[in-house]
Image: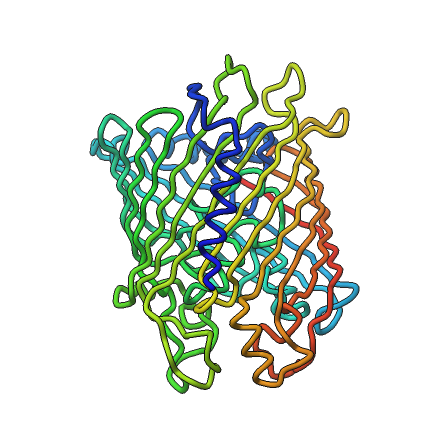
Length: 466
């Protein structure tokens, strides 16, 4: 039985029971949320406070930034450092350090050369250090949202044109899906990668899909007819790094496209669509703000049939995913605009006969300004669950892999973001990983042909944005 249908029923029930669908209050564009954290590994730089204001005259030497801004050129740098260690579980215990420098350049072509309604964006990474998942825990969720193979890599590079009085936006170039699709603003607080681009897509799509650290050529259309509704549709090359060919290229997708410049166009296409509804986000709204999103993903390529042993090459054409997201403010501190608590829920399903993960859900709560005198700090707790396809589990049994039968992976995370200064935060973090390798050896590793045990992970993230 294909789990996609049952997941759609769960999603429909969640949305149908939500009172916001009967409301029509005007508010700002979707994704505004009462408790959005000050800094985030996935948050748009434009919404992140800068440490520049704390540096005085050193914040903009020679007024270079101010001069370029008048010409429509804006740049930013974000450095995220993660120190993580597992005291138990995984395939071994220990600590790792990983850092990522994120460099963004945005150009308003009207200010620069008089070309109206055009904009250019370029983003690149310098990734250094070692990740805990790849070295210690071997989990399906990836303990850090910045974990990737060390490299200097182009990420996104696109041109966007605005039409229809600012309601329609067309974007083309090197694109990533995780910058606009399947996003919960509440979830951006958390360190684990799956609260960004979820484990169901990262594990089921070729090369992990068009998501950090691999973007791919594509085009996106965004239509926002009013302050409540936003519609997104995008088409991507379906395999950012291309297929693995033994003896010809590297096994790891991030190594196959080590610089982010493969610009592949020959793979089967991948389509993302999403509808967003924002409600109660105006200052005069009677209720608390929130956002509802529903999405559908289709890949046109061939996928290995999970109902037969992996040694038998048999494919099925196409793969599908459906998902839904609710971001809901549940409390706003009186007299404030951005302090309070909000919750999020994300649910997704896919067919179990062509996917490793056929059902995924995560949820959590965060509170900005929880501790008196710390109005910008944000605390949060969350959980995630990924179910391994019954067809995959059956093949494990038939192959005689017991007791290494893959069944599920789970996660609990608790975190606190301490804002040292605008644009600078420290974030202690705790994660507990249940069945990191789905109870089996889910990530091939010749050195560790053993079960991957539940892992306790402690960490500290530092983020500086300029």
